[in-house]
Length: 346
Ligand SMILES: NC(=O)c1ccc[n+]([C@@H]2O[C@H](COP(=O)([O-])OP(=O)(O)OC[C@H]3O[C@@H](n4cnc5c(N)ncnc54)[C@H](OP(=O)(O)O)[C@@H]3O)[C@@H](O)[C@H]2O)c1
Image (cartoon, rainbow, N blue to C red):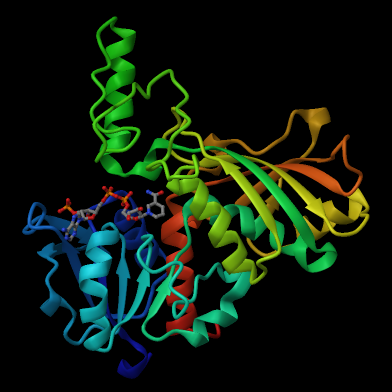
């Protein structure tokens, strides 16, 4: 490969739950890297991280970190993206952002490669990676949208604690031990680290992901509603969401009711899903086969099962959609976009 087709890459949030997976995927996929910068807060600066048999030193992310960087993958929270992405763009980097900072910005494409990869071409330096629970839902619904049209979606999520970062995983595992030993769970991070009230996560189900909005929905629920319309490019799709945290480490599960615009044949729906890129149909009730978070964990695909006709509306169907939130929900979606920029023919 000539030097011109190698890229100077920066990973911001390299020590986090998403950043760690981005690094693993860049190595596994043999991404064409000329140089790799690992950036974090001052807390992790100096830490050594292995990459393809070498040890790289993590640096504190500053506005000057992006000189000479071609592609920057951000997963260090919305505030960091808002502060540093404009500087990275000034330095000429294309930024792929996993946070909420630019997703609804009209100038920023919001991309799920299986749905709207063509939007990447419209970027002005920033490409946003959607919210994890939205990515897996739209990836599964796109083939049905293209064939039948979609008028309405009602989704309830069962989201893993890894969706709230590495510290939330540690908290849930610690609490599990504490509660089994008969001690207090001492919640400290979940449901929302910046809010004063915390709830036990181990052995519990918590109907709050992110902060409540004035309309009674949480921010996570509003992300699903707004981002679905933007990614599908269709404001007429009605969406309602209830987002719930469950004591699962990796993999978000979703119960999705979808109303199509036309009558449909269930066999055709299953065939469309089975043929769709990035989708795996796991659906055989006679053998108790359906998608499970434990089986989706560590995989890049979106798993769909429990595909059945709704009994109250002949144009509606019900689905169970599961995917690893750290992979298709974040790191893999971002690396797919980076590959599209770096190696469009792949
Ligand atoms: N987890 C998911 O499933 C998921 C899915 C989609 C999107 N996201 C988004 O991705 C982002 C990261 O999520 P995560 O789960 O990986 O969180 P995490 O495990 O808590 O990791 C956060 C990362 O950001 C770095 N960081 C924090 N403050 C920083 C600062 N001021 N400057 C530079 N780096 C800073 C941390 O570095 P230190 O080691 O120095 O603290 C760490 O590397 C969030 O915005 C989240 O909403 C997450």
